Length: 328
Image (cartoon, rainbow, N blue to C red; front, side, top):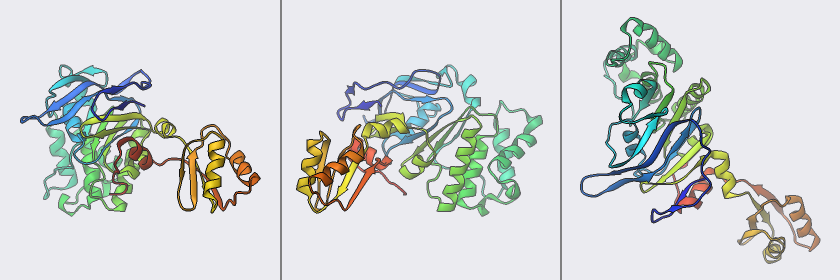
């Protein structure tokens, strides 16, 4: 896991594994006119084949970073690569292999879903007009909108609109798909539709980069995550490694909290915490059975004992000192 200090100075941490990356940045920075620092010196590495969650509260610099990656905003400093191709010199090579949905889809409300995709396809100078019908049909089928292809866009549900936006991003063969808040504003059904689609696209071998402020969504679909806070990258890792860094805790429910705390401290467990009827600590390598046996052995009344794996929310609160939206 890579961490960054609050003041912005790098903190030594084990690096991510090197290798082939769909996205790689070095010192990427954006300072707007007037001096506002939106993104500060980030080194982002997205492995090929990953479903990568790009997390942070609204205003943390996620969308600005994505706009720099796609060439929509020029960075103030730093460099980056897409699919191993240095930018900006490699735009013509890399961008035809990249699909994106930034800040929600924008389509003509009175045209059908299929007609809107025809307009998108016609605007792509790299697309072969002779195979347009086939590409559009495949894209609609891929997102489950074949039956609604002739329906006007204004009559689409929010989930259908998001899926059509993803279809537009997937009109050609893509190695990388970048989605900015793809479930923003969706009801539970629409959210499930988009979540399922992301899994299916990833299963086909496409790297999916998902920006979101909704932890529950990221936790369900992503293999890797990075966390932004106030324009700075404060963590990036595989999801499993990020949880492992936070450590598993053991929680004991008991009326004898003082005695229970003594047992946990005596066993050498770190970060012992006590409340009215509960004591917890980092479990480390100790077996929970031994903790229970020690408690009972000294007469602690154990009402309940649980091994607690940190949620993504727990990890982020620990990393950033603030909460994120869990379900929106």
